[in-house]
Amino acid sequence: MAAVRVLVVDDLLTMRRLIAAILRELGITQIAEASNGPKALEYLAHHPVDLLICDWNMPGMTGLEVLQAVRADPRFKDLPVLMVTAEGSVEQVRDAIAAGVTSYVVKPFLPSTLKLHTRKCLKRHQRLASTVAQ
Image 1 (cartoon, one colour):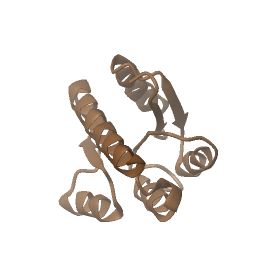
Image 2 (spheres, helix red, strand yellow; image 1 turned 90 degrees about the horizontal axis):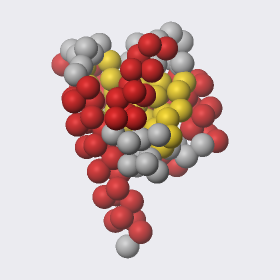
Image 3 (cartoon, helix red, strand yellow; image 1 turned 120 degrees about the horizontal axis):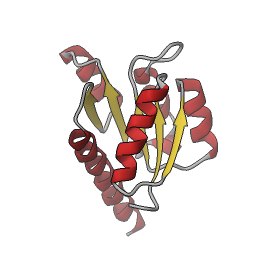
Image 4 (cartoon, rainbow, N blue to C red; image 1 turned 90 degrees about the vertical axis):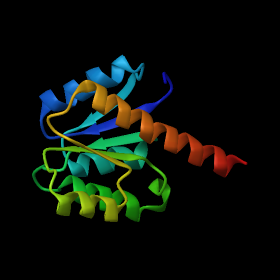
């Protein structure tokens, strides 16, 4: 997975670093970080990524709002979005699914759980890309 580019969005530096360390264990080395939703959207506007990993609870703009903004942009309609959050209520999961989330991991999580969902998101992305290329 060396060529995979991931953007990790979380207002907590320690969580961004933890997620990045787990991604590196998968062989992913191109990892960008954003501390909030507006910075994430600005980054996406100028840099291609293969996966967006986003927290739900952030000041100013929630992860759900980031997801909605990403899905509203035709350039990102197939971008896998993995929500990693302490929010695990049925309503919030339902809202994320309705907004087009690819996968959802509730904090606290085991590294193996994040790896599993990351692989799932990237495999889905690769299948979509190969379908479009044919």
